[in-house]
Length: 296
Image (cartoon, rainbow, N blue to C red; front, side, top):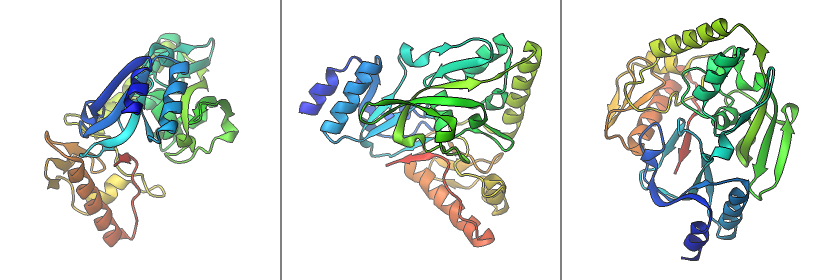
């Protein structure tokens, strides 16, 4: 196939029929037609040009921590910005420019070392900066959008633009950035005592570990909270904790988590999501919206 040869010519890591279960925290998903990690910006542009020419959808993945990929696989090019150029952190004082491929754990480690406060609430989230920006990751009191100065992006035609914060439609678990590939962001943090930053990070980690069950693969919260009401609490009140379908189960500790018990399929997770949505609708007349990305 001509498209195969074009993608083979792109410099970086290129795989064909790559199982998505290797790249998602759910450990679920069939093979993607193409899995691509371009070496640099130029190769990324070539990749996008080829995908457009051959009408191949492009899906962007970071740490794979909020993705449910289809069992049958994906007729798409899955793009991950994992090369060195996409993992850089620069800046001085309390301003950092962070590339989208930087993991949140690494970013927090640097903040702890430099005494930079503001991002501690992200501790324990197994994602990258790009993913955190795309979904405006956060807690009820704070989101990553609060710290953004601007975001450098590339559209799917290869054009690079820097968006000021006011140009980005940040909302609850949303940003409007899905129509772009996020390259990096400039964050404004606060100078603080290193010990205090370390203590706050550790405190958030303790809170997450106490509330969540990380012994089995999952994608974190599968539904968004509804107008301040906890989706997990609503599902719990429907008596669904521990409910199992196939190889997947609603978590007994946090009902907004669905766990892969070892051999779960995407269809098992989707059936549990449908069940939870139907029961919450019936009991509370509330329609839950997915927080995870469902790739089919």
